[in-house]
Amino acid sequence: MANKGIFVVLMGAVFALVFFRADCAAQIRGARVHDKVVSLSPEEADSNWEKFKKSGIACDYCMDFKISHAPRRGQEVEYVGEIFGAKANALGEEKMRIRIKKSDSDKFEDWLLVFSPDRRQVWKFEGGKAREISELDIPICGGLLVSPFDFMMPFKSWKSNYEGSGRIGQAVHFYSLVPENPGGGGKIEKVVVALTREFNSPAQVETFGKGGEEKVLSLGSVKKIDGLWMMLQFELLDKASRDRDTLRFTAAKVRAKLDPDVFSPDNLGKVPNKPALDKL
View (cartoon, helix red, strand yellow):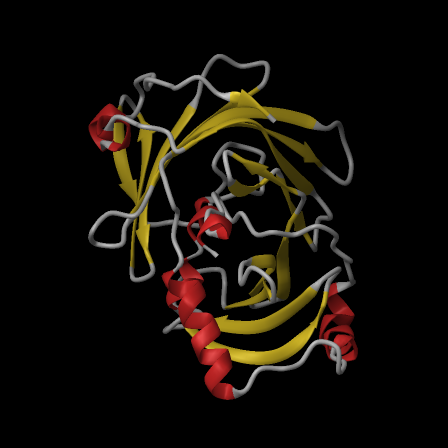
């Protein structure tokens, strides 16, 4: 299982996904349950979630990516960027640095995310310095749907409720999560996660606000790099606007040796040292 354990940036092992309408999600989810996907006992369900909650990144890594933002109306816009990631430290904290810009721009947005199942910090480079921010559901670059929330998975620490088994292209177990204080200032009031039976990693993450389902994040194809599984693509759909972000990783270096200074808030805005990457 160790070689299956690196799922960088929500890297679940997802091969084929079936999409369904939000207004009948509950009915379809129930219809998917059948005897070939055995539901877990309460004890098994709790143990399954705890294993996912404690899962982390197996090594340092660096990756290039592209995001295509496709609005329901209007032209598609392309963004490019790079992600530097550090494996969990002794405190269980993972660190992620994200630099992103429109493909026709020279200016990068620069983010630093530090997170564990029970703690989260976000810095953004603005006005010539790093600023710590509390918002997790704001775009990582103007015009996008993708936010720090989608990378950090804060719902890992929320109260979980097992909803049963089913299929979305593969066998999954559904969990619903609610924050300790629903509606306490944040936009997201519930998350439904489909964990794959094989890898116990997210195949799909649905977020719900006061008005119902807001976004669906679906994990895409995977590839084995240097003996480790990694995801090549994910898609984020806004259910109301029908706008869609598709992120695809284009190059990567896993088992990288990254300078710890890459993850210092003081170095946001500076170009970090980058290892040679292999094209995907």
